[in-house]
Structures are given as structure tokens and as C-alpha cells.
Amino acid sequence: MKQLKPCNICGAEIAKYVCRNCGANVCENCYDKEKGICIRCEMH
Ligand SMILES: [Zn+2]
Ligand SMILES: [Zn+2]
Image (cartoon, rainbow, N blue to C red; front, side, top):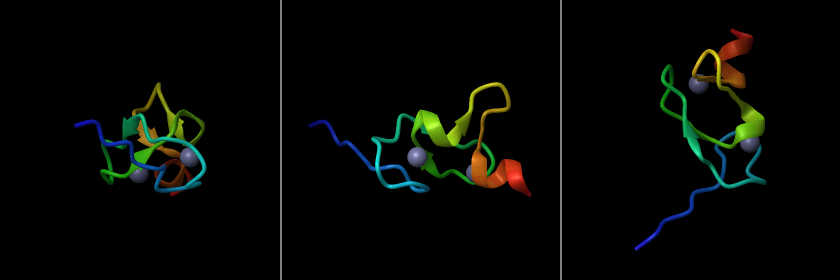
């Protein structure tokens, strides 16, 4: 069974990544691949 979760930040895309800082499921638009964190964490 495949479970597709929406992005925790924008809610508009399917979450493909997990932030290693806060554990949020985020889409590629809301994820910094180099840092491995979501844009929400990046702002802090
Ligand atoms: Zn997103
Ligand atoms: Zn995060």
C-alpha cells in the first residue's frame, strides 16, 4: 500500500523528502537538498 503524503509546508505537492532537523514531510520545492532540511528550518 502506497501512501502519498502532502507536503507539510505548502500542502500542494506530494512530500518526497523528510527534513532531518524537524522530521517534516516536504516536497522538493520546500526542501534544501544540499542541507537536508526544509525551508522552514532554513529560515531559523
Ligand atoms: Zn512544499
Ligand atoms: Zn524542518
